[in-house]
Length: 283
Image (cartoon, rainbow, N blue to C red):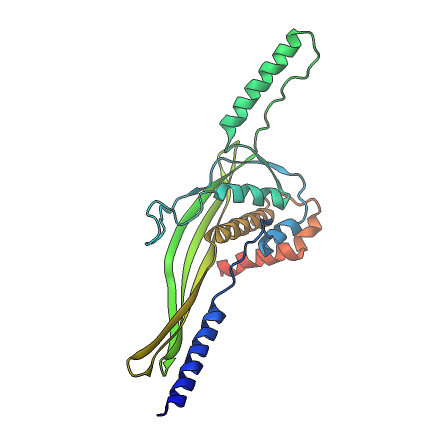
């Protein structure tokens, strides 16, 4: 082997390694804050037919009931799923146009502010001013309860790799799953009107490429690059909650628990889409 051949082989291998590194290394750029994009399920919620009347609804909490923590090397004090699921639920209820969510999660803060407002009104009334009193709080008709009931890791794993003449690539993937349970409770009787469970799969993928070969006597070229893609867990929780709200509304319409403004809307595309999923699961 002459020196020219070694040099050309070295350059080609090094160039190939740099090309692989460039393919899997995404550019890091500062992104400006932006609104969270609406998912397809959120769009379905907004497309639901109008109800006969919006229902007063309360959400006190929607907790993480899994007790699951992030795997090592993450902090043992960091939970695997979001603790703000109640905010996602309130947003989905309001987005649907079927419910009027009432503030209950921060009820103590609300009551404190109302005490301050009453004190100001009483002071002004004593001074002879005509001031309207603080109105009563609305009471809810429906209470939404439930939570994140399961977070299963590694429900499906796999990978693929190949190496030729010291140059190779490998890919691994992992699938986790989060499960949501949502139930609607009649405040007057305590009866559970409907209950729905939804699940969403969370995908993670890792791609690695590398070069490992001798280019000359006692000269070793080694290069590695990789990239990992993890689907945001909070986004999956949000999607599962939105799907649960959509299914709960459609199930309530089909079962006659609440009514449409226009009864003919029972044949609308979005109602048919979600009602067919119930039929498919029951069979």
